[in-house]
Image (cartoon, rainbow, N blue to C red; front, side, top):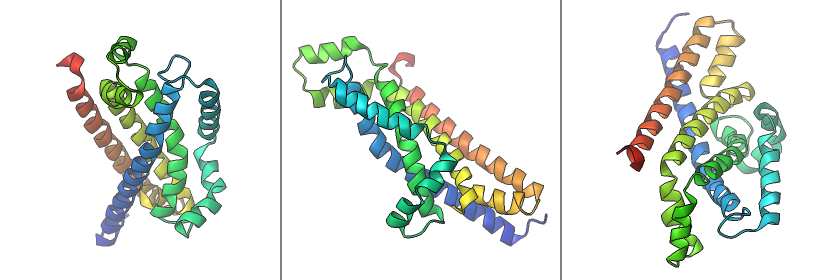
Length: 221
């Protein structure tokens, strides 16, 4: 395979589309996932505002969404994607199934991080008369920040993998290039290059979030 300007431009466009899909779907997934994760913690039996029935129903819905394999979800939500975006191919269309698949996972990651916060800190805030909102925004989220950032690194790198898988249905990005050129045209070099580029993107995301997490962790200062 020859690396002419057309091939280079195609790879650069694939990188851009992958970064675009991952960034937008991660942002939207966290906009949905963080409130759900907070709700799971707050309404738990030992939470700030226990509401077992709501917690159980929400947990079941999240678990059901998490249990659907992404490649199946891609096909299942095609009518929803067409309704929201107006088409079923391209990076914008891929964002819809990416968000639907990622936000349940992220909500559980957020729940896990918030539950790591020392109960004594929460009790101290309660004893000082802090409201539920104050405990959430001034105690839970700041104390869980390092863990939330580690969870973000894991979640976003998972979304990178999903975005590559979305290439199977014409979503664009590096996954689409790997399938159309590397797999269907038997161009092994192109397949390897797209894999290497995806690995580099994952490593950059992982390194950035891990460094920010270490800097924000009061225990290692």
